[in-house]
Amino acid sequence: MEPLMALLVEWWWIGPAAAGAGTVGWLGVRRSRQRALPAGTTTGDRAARAWASRPMGKAAARRLELDAALLDLQSARHAVTRGRADVKVADAEVVRAQAERAASRVPADAVAAARGRLTDAQRDLRAAAAEVRARRAGVKAAKAMLPAIRAGSAPLPVARLLAEHDAILARWMAYETDPALAIDYPEMSDSRSPLLADFLRAHEKAQWLRPASVQTRLEPAEFLAYRDAVRRTAHAFDRAERAARRGDRDQPGIDGGDAWSRVASDLAETAQRALARSMESMGRAAARNWNERGAKRAQKKTSDAGGPPPRNGPVWPPPARDRPPTSPS
Image (cartoon, rainbow, N blue to C red; front, side):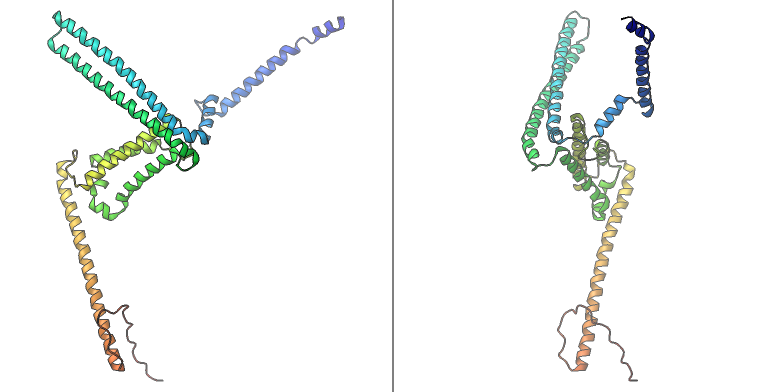
């Protein structure tokens, strides 16, 4: 027993020293990891970025639209709850305004203003209730599409949304790249048009929210934001296209000083069409003259050779020019 006590007295410092060394080593590793991160970030931020950079799982990708629809329904229900509270507050304000009016403390228009706020709150509540019904229909539609998505007969929600966005961009680029459409509908390439400006703003927001690929990890809230942005872009483009195709040049927001530019554009368009018709007529006349000359040369050649007369009508392809006779050597 005495040798054991002597050993403990001699080596008592080993335990605290080892614990202190372990603590110092852990602090050093933590500090080195923090130095390796960019300024203003922590290990938690790096873990979140690593998690976001991972591709989305198949089950999550298939259920993304359903999860987003459920989140949308939850937000609509919260809006109904807030609307009911606003109606109660507005009703209480009407009662208070009536009481103060009875005591001649407020003018008569205060009661009317309170009733107007109550009417607005009730209208907002009805709109929120209708939004809840619409969101329930969206949840049912997402549930109905889920078996087809799992079977592979329907595309993934992100892939379908990206295809819808690409279709809108393709329709817009047709007006930017096709000269005939650019001439027929100049409003679709004029950024001064208010409707086209609305489309460009909606397109910019949708492009900002667009995921990099189908495998990009998206939260339901991010999917909802991108879906709503694509829908707003589609609606804005449809409005601009309808206005351009029906020739609605009197859109609000275009200055009257641009009338001369519109007249000049119309004149240029008319001149280009007239030039195209003239070139087409000249081409037909040149082709007819060429065929007539070819027929005459063929008729002369066959008459000199004693062959049958050529057939009437245009000759195509044009005959080759007669080569000059070569003198015998």
